[in-house]
Image (cartoon, rainbow, N blue to C red):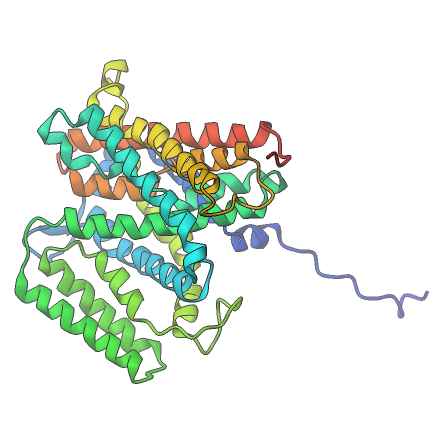
Length: 403
């Protein structure tokens, strides 16, 4: 064959592009950013790090928060966009995805409920004797989907696709529970006028959907107004993200997550990478930094961090695995396809990675700096133990399905 008749060489695939297109990339980057934050917080750069995080950068949007800082813009502003994406994913899965029927919902709903209740019970057993610590009961109840999927991705073909689907659906239902907890249990006082304004804005968004408005910009403008009204109301502003998501119209378009005729799919597709690669890493960097200077065994075993760590590491795995086992034995649901019980247990361990949502709830539960550091230590201990043990079990525990 002559040079002229040879087929053109195909363009080599970009390893970086393939990585960024994978669902696990955000979780892997989050791990690196969290490690960087802990490293910086324990180096001579620590003072500059903490000064930057708490630097005043904006006006006072509400007397409750005071002047806006970098930390507040990230936790109350950018994280509202994260919760907007969470809400979009929840709505899509329940209307047009893996949770569209009650048969599909049963196992992840039961597993997520048990995986939230038992960690809270473990925490209260250890730390509930101190009334000042009871408020932290929900910290170990959440699962970090990005972090957990990132760890699962490191296993490659050793983990069947059904395990990833199970982990994702449990984490999505878990996110629903976390959103409800934030709205119901971490709202101290309400401004009824602002709350009424937020409700009116949300109703207008719903009306736009009913009227068939097919452009995104009216919804986004109203979502920004909804965020500010919610901020003023006393309900945590990130709840506005979830409410806005529920008002975005969804047209069924199975297997086409960027379908042009579905506003929800278009917005979810547009937000996925900015949230995964900018917002969540920024949150991790701003919230994972904790100084271990002077932290000894006694501090690690104090009720607050120890209760959180055991809630994540023990409560999550026992609650999720026991509920799945019970559902299968009672004939309520089938075990994830092509997965052994050992692999199901490994995924239950990974559900104990509570990083992003646990740190977020911890920031709402405790505003004292010392308690905040204790929360970070507990979340990091529980999440790291869960990640390492889950990975090792799935990596070295065998892959053959057993009855």
